[in-house]
Length: 361
Image 1 (tube, rainbow, N blue to C red):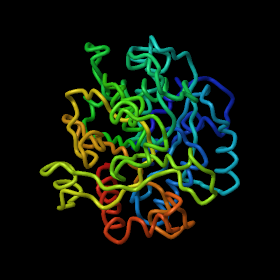
Image 2: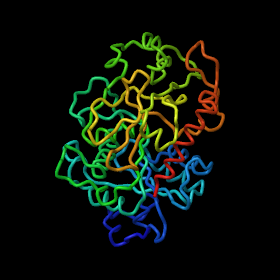
Image 3: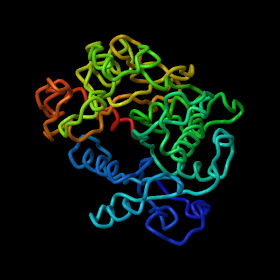
């Protein structure tokens, strides 16, 4: 994939640094994937998946992109890439003015979003904190917003890629390349929904099950618990922050036809969220639910076949090799994540990653 260096010069004119990879010269003949919110943890995760042949990207290199105002010190990522000689990882920061009233329209970032789209194969959107409810037209009742500028950036980028009813005359970038790859995990799926005009359940226990006391939440069936609320009841260094539960998969949908997983129920998946999709735009099909079908756990775009997301976390390295032995509750026996998903779970996750690898064209 060739780089149009004259066009790339439209990126903000800042001194050449490790944060301006495309400005310094994306190289002709190379291919690139984007990683939104490239923290050290997310870079480590992508490196692990590639190094262990879970994610297959060939010679494709990864460029982390972010908004300068995000609530994270990306100098840490710069140092990590340099100190570990990660020659296939790069960073590109963007700057400009984003506000709640301009993210779903032409803005300071629109030209650079188009450049990124034209010069790359796709993008990953990772997990993270709550989106500010004003961005999907609601008052804040339960959301804990700690990184508002990250959400402004990622929602605007996703809107430019996919379009939405907020600005029906806008032609999404994927119309010129419908095979472009986009995957989202947890917050990534929620962002894809909000960017295309959807809304969120701000707190699953409060809004779905009418419970807000952690002591009552942990009495629910395990399949209805999407986060570990035991950590709000007592302190223990062995407590994991997540829960594991199976999913109900669409009988003749994405997981059966594309991932090639035949059962209609998945093995356990790692779940760590208190919010979920409420209203879903018609451009999406549902690929998975919680076992009671009250929480949407997977979506796929109807028009762009390589755009899909899941509410769970298939990317966590300790799903694929033993890590620390942790507990879910006081009565639980310590087990690793690797042991909790078991051989069938490992097979399920690797098949999903095999499909993700195939979708990156």
